[in-house]
Image (tube, rainbow over all chains, first blue to last red; front, side, top):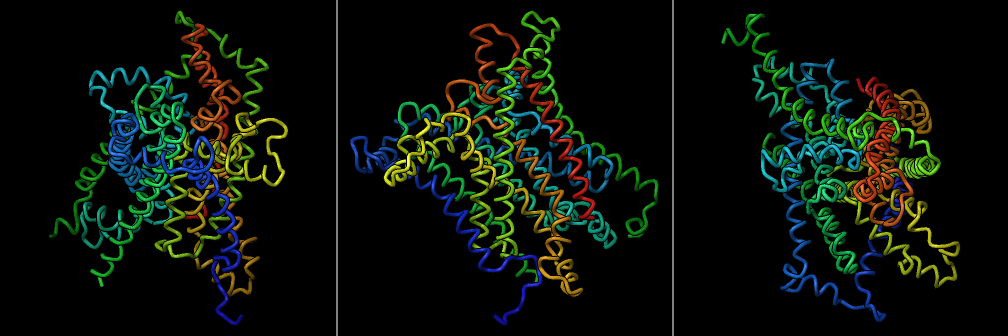
Length: 273
Length: 295
């Protein structure tokens, strides 16, 4: 036991393993239960027939509603991330650099959507969307404007905790005094330092949008969740299978995004050295 | 060259300040159109009757015993799941501390937490029906051991049935929101503590604890608000009745068209917002303490 005594805050290997194993097992049970349920035969015993039905060539016809909902949800996720990165992120950086007095105001605004739950918002969104439909048509992507507001608190928290841990004011002043223009300050100094916050914000935005049910169902739009509820009434096995696939899909997607970021990071480090 | 290294003061102000103010307008416009206007419309509807006249009747109806009971149910479900979620989530954050953020386990935990925290909704209801439903995996397994979890009646489709599914999304949300705060602990503090002869206990009790406390309480309030305003899981699990406030709003929205009971949803929304404003005021106060340490 003569190894280096950890100086930092990190836990010992035993505590770490015990906590992660216990929580991991408990959190795996509902997912395993869903899988077990999807294999059940109504007459008793187990069968692969429910899964075979989902993966049969005619599935896109049989379960067309689900595939439409999935496509709509993916489109909404992309548009909402773009809204967050194009509207929220520049505003937060701008406020941090130029308008420190507005920081509390921005935070207050970004927290409001927690105070105003989706089910409340939807009452007021209905008239707004009748105007939006007249201006931009009633295509599904317009729902992303409402979703952008829904994810505001989470995206804000993710970016802000990164932003307040990095001294962007000093960094940008240093870069400016070394002759960098605002463009390179943003692209080569601020954004790389905010990578973790931006990623976390995108992660949670995608997750929120793919799981959104309240607004879509009450505005009578079709997304993945409303389609799942619809099909669960006629075929609970298929609803569970699609839920498993959706959860797995989101998991892989988020894993992929994380990997992509760390790859880019190691590559740029190699290039720099 | 000379212009760039020493720009005249006034010219620089003109160039840098006015575009900055313009830079705030997209966000301001967006928030006005899709946050301010819908909120005002939703809340104001509770103060008017079907004919468009101002009335306090809907607000007064909030204090009827059955409505107060749903607020109480919402409160204790949110409190229990927020506390359990915050404590378990903080423990997981602690366990993850010091691991390589790009490592396989960290990546998997990050992704899984993100999925479960906000992706759940309807699908968590399916998951828990498959787990502790009447024919659920765990229910059947425990029945084999002679334990009947439903010996006092089936509680999964009642308010107590919300606790486990809610904890299932509260813990991951805690991991997401609290992890950055834990990672923000400066290694120098631990080194200084060690140099001055402090133990790890001293470090946690006298340094990390006080620094993290506002952030922890802030996350706790966020979790409470998250549970209090959550709709999808409850809606999918409890199809009949209105046991918590969001379901009461659903019922009011539906009955508005069926029974002509006008604008009760708006009044419920108003009541909900009042509670949420108090919570968020507390959260905001705690956040300002957190940032004090980070500067």
